[in-house]
Image (cartoon, rainbow, N blue to C red; front, side):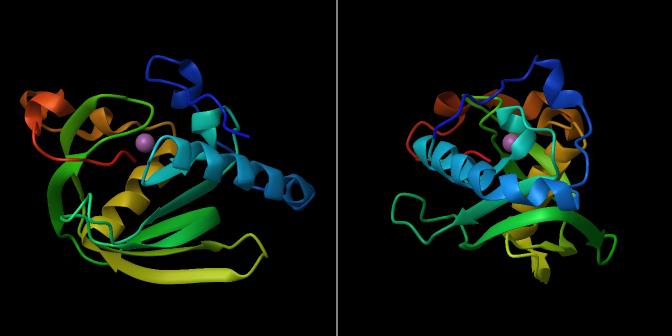
Length: 176
Ligand code: NI
């Protein structure tokens, strides 16, 4: 089922979500199905459970190679429970981000350039990966939602926040 996405200003987006516990797993398949449908309906690159009002540490993300987004590096389709991110070095990169909870806007956000992330897949198996570039950015953006952080709260220069159609009048862009 396509669910409503909470938008910036809703205090629920500022809360910390709790870890998924053993008793939560039976409901997880339905939650993930709703998240997939909601993300695809809005053409997003990722979605976190708290964005649909579910305060659990669950994120999904993925970007296929797509002619509409020639600049977007592909990101493997991933459904992640209780994710943990570890930066691999001190390198920081700035890049443009959008968010389904902040519709119509884009901003330049600093993120760790190289990370390791670890979590469980929907079958309870461990996923552990290293990521860099856009992949690392998407993971950090989604996991921030689990701690009540929206990307404008990470920005260092609000002069670099603007409306997508003004900033990028000629290109299709994707929202995280
Ligand atoms: Ni977002």
